[in-house]
Image (cartoon, helix red, strand yellow):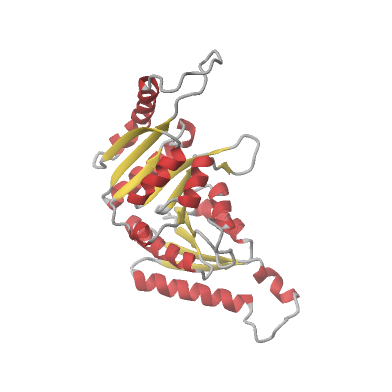
Amino acid sequence: MGTVTLPLVVGVDGSDSCLLAVDWAVDEAARHGVPLRLVYASLWARYETSLPSVDPRRPSEQVLAEHIVASAADRAERRNPDVKLTTDIVPEDAAAALVSAGDEAFALVTGSRGRSELKGLLLGSVGLGVSARAHCPVVVIRGDRVGLAGTHERILLGLGESDTTAEAVRFAFREAEVRGCVLDVVRAWRRPAYDRHGDRLQPGGPADTYEESATAVIDALLKAASAEHPHVRTRPAVLEGPAGKILVDRSAAADLVIVGAHRRTGHFGFQLGRVSHALLHHAQCPVAVVPERQ
């Protein structure tokens, strides 16, 4: 029996953000040679038949869902007719449906805001919920036209601690290889406020030790992946400062920024730290959150 190729799953809801996600997902599916699955999910599809119609002229949720999915499928087929495409309408909460779909997905793709989200929100509740709970990589499509164009030919990987990074490293090398991109790898470091005895350190002290430690982390985490992907060009950098700000600033020159996520002991889902939150709300290009392997 042959190996089953997992699909790239993208959530659709008719919003402008969703259409950008469909475009990005079509290109990503073509790059990796995987099928594309469009999923529309809404609890209204479950409850509609039991509720009286307030306005009989108003399209039913089912009709609306079918129109949204058909429009998204037509857009995907026009963008690349060679990508194998399937569609689904699921009577569930959108975030829950996508998380479930992610159990058998190459990756999940969502827009940064849904059609019901207020324009003032930086990231929709579905995108945030899926990023925090899915067991496969989640890519939230955000950024301006330049950030979405994919013309920088750079992938940006933010390295955290080792327990959050191994899968993210593998994902980043794979993306850089299929795109023929340079892989920028960043490890941020900060001077501690206190020494090991609890005494406050003087500002402006020697930075060599912290910088060397950050460099050692990069070398250790990239060693295996570099050997597996010898053609990927990497540009490691260790920078002093808050990791979130550094990565948000550098996302302006990247086609995709990638970070890891780790499981919280005794809690459901994965931990999205301050860096992930900063990127999901402020990055100037798509953001991939890659959970650790269970």
